Amino acid sequence: MKEKNKEKKEPELEKIADEPVFEKDLGEVLATWDFPEFIMHERGKLWYILFGAIFLALIIYSYFSDNLLFAIIIALFIITYFSMERRGPINIQVAITEDGILINSKFFAFEDLQDFYIIYYPPRVKNLYFQPKNHLRPAIVWPLEDENPVEIRKILLKYLPEDLEKEEIPASESVSKILRL
Picture (cartoon, rainbow, N blue to C red):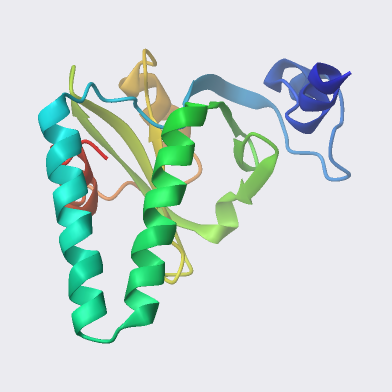
């Protein structure tokens, strides 16, 4: 029973292409693939020791600076991080349609997106980025996995401009890769 409920929450993209899941027609599905929510990095004992020492130092600092809120934020981060690591990544299904992009069942119309860019340095970095028009929203990042970036670019150029100035991954993404977060 529980497995059937999970299947209903995240419809398969093939079903989206054939059956109207939404009230609004999303147009023809032009490309579809899936990827894990996050990458499970290999971490040795040294990483866990350093991670623990840093966060213990931050908790001690928050105590001596009488900053209870900081201690709560650190504790919530640790709990969230390790619960996600324990659960493991879920598979995210994405699609590019004639009207926008689809992430599992969340739709973003092309009108709401400013542009896209592709950072492609295989095998380490193969990402597709979408910049929303609302700059308060973060960029949408999709790993390209085994998709052909030239074909994806051809599809997207029909609907969105490409930002050719961006050639490197964002700094926040670089830091998280270095720290294996």
